[in-house]
Length: 261
Ligand code: BTN
Image (cartoon, rainbow, N blue to C red; front, side, top):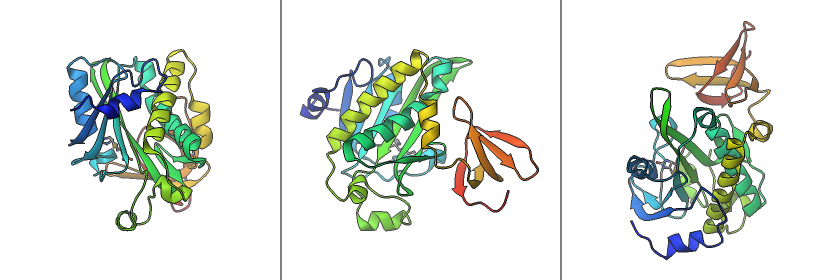
């Protein structure tokens, strides 16, 4: 770890009350998720941020690999939420990422349920929430965020053209530190507003490109096909099946345009 000029530079001009009060910057890590969890186990205060230049074992949802070469953003934030705030973390993170990208690039990202951030239908950012609890007591949550600032042609091809970088989408250079700083500020304000009872769920819902679409949701070995009818107050997806039943999906992988519902 280093308490080097990068951390100091990130802190300067960062006006937050909780998120980013402490920023730990690493040149390389296996995953910022693991380091943030280590910090949380050691008693790190809420809002501690772990940033890495490179991850050797970056991970996404469902244990997928999150390729983490230099030039993009990889960070994890420690939270110590109440159970009701925990239910909002994914929504808070999704809106914060969208707002930060919009403010720093002028792009208009949308969200594919539950938390893929897309520009022009291509993924530019992913969010991973991991929580350690004892019974109904939340010990801590780690919110991991990866944002593609720039992806080379080979990387885009390796991701089957389904992802892109902010620079490729905006057609200009994007200041990585500026995106990070704005993200921490948006995360801070949205988290604190949520804690005060003002959830960003309506804004998140309006950003969902999934709603109204015929989709296929896969979770573990099961697949559901139906129409994404809505989301509830904590972001669970309400899926209307062909037989008319409404099911509540708490997690899953969505593909658009599933066969009829
Ligand atoms: C997804 O879309 O599947 C979620 C991707 C989350 C990636 C970020 S990068 C920073 C943090 N560290 C990790 O290993 N993963 C998250």
